[in-house]
Image 1 (cartoon, rainbow, N blue to C red):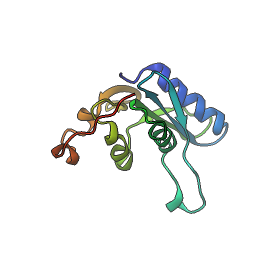
Image 2: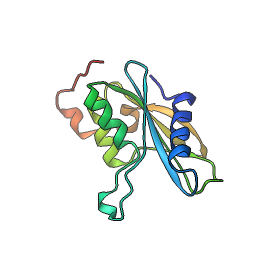
Image 3: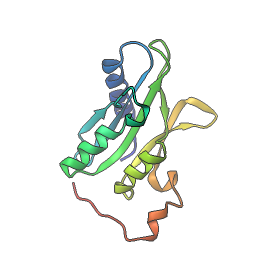
Image 4: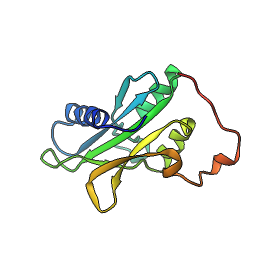
Amino acid sequence: MPVDQTLVDAAKAQARARFPSGEGGAAAVYLCDGSILTSVGFDSPNEAANLCYETGAYCEAYRQGKTVVASVCVIREHENAPFVVVAPCGICRERLAIWRESVAVAVPVTDNPSQWRSVSFQDLQPWYWAAAFSSTSHTC
């Protein structure tokens, strides 16, 4: 399932709810059953303890035994700035690899970062290191 505007809007709504002012962001994922999970990052005074916006949704999907089929992360610099889609960082790519056969992610359009597109994990990570080993299958 590709990332769509509904999923992007769910992430934006979560970000606005948790961070009504200042900078902020959130993530949203579709599960294999069509439901949406959203999450925000843990913001600790100790930077080493902070987590990516996506982490909570990925952990909840895993806890439920569900497959993540689409993922998006949005951020903004302040409450009057537009949200932009950001590609998953390296550690979130490792987290997404659990579902690599089925997951799509939103990435910004290179020449116009205010726009985004949906790509498969394979397109995001064409030479993913664990692809050399047996694939992991998940059921919904």
